[in-house]
Length: 268
Image (cartoon, rainbow, N blue to C red; front, side, top):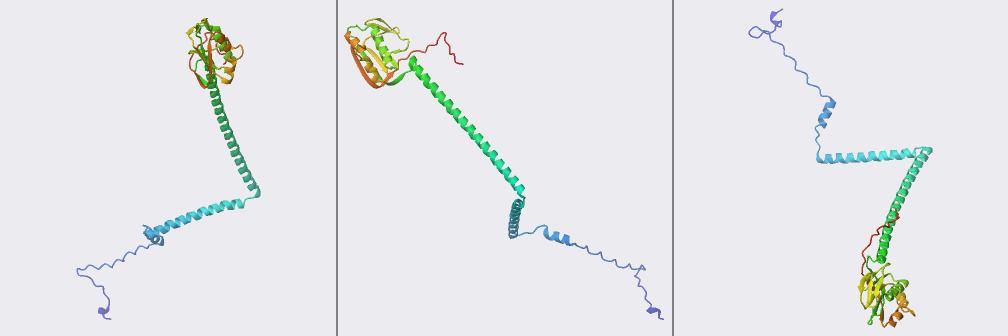
């Protein structure tokens, strides 16, 4: 055998044996999940795709709500008769409670309105009563239909008692407010003095004596002209009497309000 034919390893120069070539590292395998994630993130959506996604989301939400509503209706349709009766009773009870509450509130409102009306009516009546008492007491002015009685006494023969008789006749005929020569006539008014020298509540007055009277003219004038009455008595003393009716008489002479010294109201 030829030795030249035997294989021999070649040695590099320098006598060091050559190292065998290192195998290349295997490439890392990429799983399907990683490829999917790599394709989805980061998202690469166009504007049209984004709009489609929003529309699909809205459609899905609407379908979910519809399915839920349908499920509720289906639950009622599938409920037993006893359950439906119970639910109906509960609804009726709640409706009745609401109606009762509404009625109670309506009653409270009506009561409050009536209370307010009663309070307002009481206030009006109190003010009216105060006005009436003020007219009688002479502390407030008065206005209304009535007459004016003017007595002229040229001979000075008209005595205080004749003027007092005229006041009494007028009161009996329904006079509500009277003043004589600017002096308000009230319940305790008195006439004093002598003929031609007359005083009313201590205040001297002179002829002509002018009576301003509020009341019904159709009653006041005839009361003065009755036979033997005030007018005839004064005419016998040579006095002149003139009675004039009017639809607007003003009695504005006032008396100061007097506080009683001992009397007190017995009302609580």
